[in-house]
Amino acid sequence: MQTTKHGAAAGEGGRPERADWTIDQGWESYTVEEHAVWKTLFERQAKLLPGRACDEFVAGMHALPIGADQIPDFRRLSEVLMQHTGWQVVAVPGLVPDEVFFEHLANRRFPAGHFIRRPEQLDYLEEPDVFHDVFGHVPMLMNPVIADYIQAYGVGGLRAQKLGMLEQLARVYWYTVEFGLVQQRDGLRIYGAGIVSSYTESIFALDDTSPNRIGFDLARVMRTRYRIDDFQESYFVLNHLDELLELANIDFDPVYAQVKGQEDYPPGQVLEGERIYTQGSGRYSAMKRQQASGGH
Image 1 (cartoon, rainbow, N blue to C red):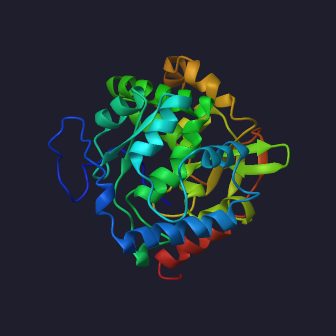
Image 2: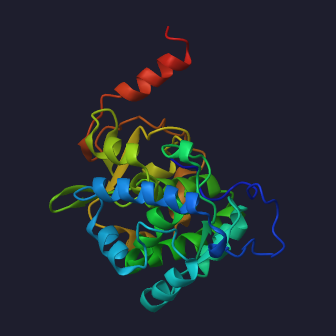
């Protein structure tokens, strides 16, 4: 479970000296303990994800210099990415301002946190770290569809800021790049980085009876709030990753006009007439609400 990668100040390091907020990864400075945390996380997901992660994620992982034994070097990752899709990975100290984030994506630079979580944070971290960013996101950047889509999101983000529609566009990123599911011939699969980098949500998103799994619709997603601090109450499903190519190439202005001023949907709401893969029981979110209210 992760927050979005933008919309807040940088992490503990404060504002970097460089205008684009990039820093040196400092790969040589990682400790034995930090590499060990990466190894624990990597091996756990590697055992869990076969039959859960989409084919494109698996192919990207195999093609990149990513393994269990050490935190990947962004320079080596970028060499391979550049050859395939023209992307590179740049290190940032944590969350970065919206305009910086969009500017990087628009120029095919993926800003990745350079720090790694502590051993006691294996299952939950609010701020994206190197495991979420590299294990979760980078393999999908080897896929031309995702590569083009995320660049288009960066360009679109700069425009959405000017139009006052950033919140609506951020929901599209959240429900695709971070928490998206896709229908393959052999069943539903994960392509969202927030799921694929999380052991518990990798299970919850596909196996649990609680969440809804709903066919993706752009205007619907723009009006749907999401959870930043817990499992999602609804996941949106693509029929095929190529649907993202259509999103990368369409003019969002008519959709913004359609949803502007419309009431938001709660995260767990199901609408009449939409394509439902699974109508969830809502058990998990109901239990959490009950706990929050003191059990009454």
